[in-house]
Length: 416
Image 1 (cartoon, rainbow, N blue to C red):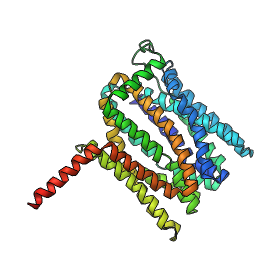
Image 2 (tube, rainbow, N blue to C red):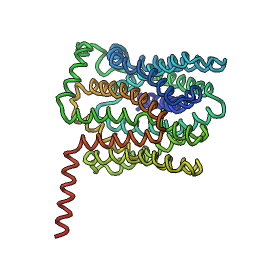
Image 3 (cartoon, one colour):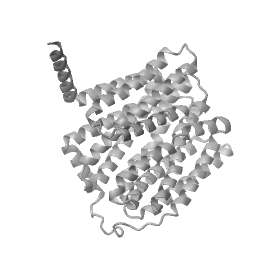
Image 4 (cartoon, one colour):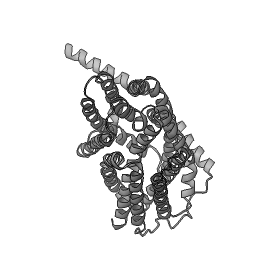
């Protein structure tokens, strides 16, 4: 526990910093460009390099001690934020600087995420992985709980440069804590790494996904969800709350906090109801998740004549529900992959899943940004989630058909 606690502390600091930037950065870019489409284009451009480099990054990380890679990544993030904060203080708001900063932060954040995941496995005994994964999940959610509110508050009062300075301080502290980890490698170094080229590893992962129909179904479903709904934080939520309802940026962070409350409550619910097989209800939970987002969109459309804070209160309520249902979907999905994917290719599989998901997100943001500029963020939110419901129904049509037939049979028996 003495070793893993340092990783947990460092992770809490870096996760807290990482949760601030995705909330505040879109507000700053939207303020700078005054356009949802340009905002969507900005985040598409800045996210693509890290996404495209992810597979190669994973192979590169295997060659080095994970503690050193983690320390290097988090220290580099601290240096990048320090430089950007100074540039902003001196009034250097050049768009090219912001693009370069965002690209580098995305790359080193991905490197930090990949290396810290492997470092976690090296520090924890196999028999205790489930226990400490649970602790990590709780700490991750608690770490990001107050970050959006603090970030938007500092941004509204002191400006974007002060937010970046806080991130630099948090990353420095995270790097210092990492240095305290004394690591004894479980496998005695990198000698036992299987000698496979990157192309071979990539093909093996693709072959497994292509030949396992259940895995392929969930894989494609995740891609569709990421395309249509992963842009909420960057495009639809700011577009609805800030651009349409003109709510203060200082309270916009409450949206993410409300979502986090739902996530924490869902985690507690799952822990206390471990006998429930959530996977059996995953299609219903997928649909319910999108229905909540549809309700947010309709609320924005029909409550425009009311006080903005009336809508915002309702939006926060729906965000709590959204966070709650999202975890009910994610936990059984992850458990399914862990139980069905062979252990010897799990890291390869999850790297490919992450690469594919991250590749589709920028395209979804770009598409949503342009559509929101044309017809409004709330209407776009409604359309996207109706499409998700259609895709889910198509993916689970056999299960839905069996459930519907069972329901009709039950009603018929009750009527006799």
